Image (cartoon, rainbow, N blue to C red; front, side, top):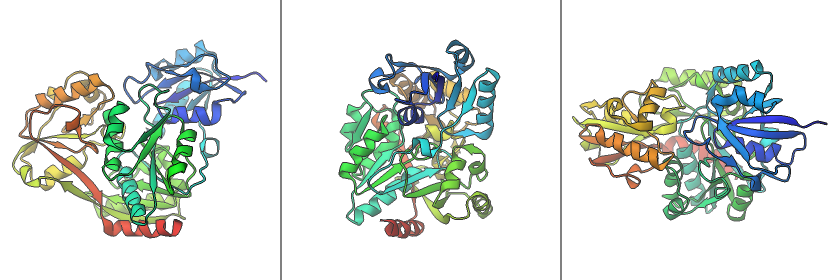
Length: 437
């Protein structure tokens, strides 16, 4: 049987996982290349020959997804597999149309073909969209397990944006480990708040190896999902967050709807300013596709370290990059804090943005009164620093999950704003987790 030539559409995470779990050493397929989208700069790499398996004599190239039509023709491609997340059903259909119009088949891989099985109990925390609050829930469950004298290891969804061989298996126990690995701002935002509570985080490229390393140390593995992707590791308990601010997105985004349909627990995150009508709508939408899951409502609390400094001030808000860009949100917890604590007004940073930050505003036109914390490279981090310092304000609200002040020199007073899940609502989750363990 002749091998089928394949292109994998990716964004530096799920694509590599799917290759390693399904295509590596699969004699029926020849992966001619990956494409990359969504994350700036990650297409200028290769997937290393040393990780690709015995069927590949060379490293596999990575190209921009915009080159897809000519790549299909150049490599005589039979099948194109979509292997990344946070796409509307319309976007998935558009990609399928491009592939089919150029003569190839369009394909997706499901859980059976991509799950890793663990010997330890696995709880996955995923969502229907980026920015629903997955990592906060993961942290709360990890701390609960800690109180039960159980050791939890967080396995974080892939974000290998650098040297893939060096990032094959990564273990983070302290901030120093982040420095040694030259983690990007986006990685730090996802890892730091776990490390702050002495919760180890494992991540990287090869999740078979990562899982086996975690099994050596963990009583329970927590899979902390990325974007709205479904788990890499087969869960024994699957918790899925939905966002009342985007009530229809659970039914209109890929692969978030897959998570919603598979969920054992659907967690409605009641963030600041959410109405009961929005909560009811997202509950009804969830029930329309999943009647077996238990629905739990948890309130998010806005946490500000110096709230008195916000009142009557001109504030610049810095928010989580992925949530604000491909996550589609125009505001976040920083805006909620500015409103709650009566800022005079929120500064529009767009006229002061430089370089790739200006390009980000041009690409994501829904962003107006918040600057997305984009830091996928040293150059972009410097441009973020310049954009923040150029924007006039009395204070800066850092509403990113990490601490950007560690990575750049900010010339004005910065206060940290975040949110936490209300313990009263989380107790229902703890009771379910307790039965599970």
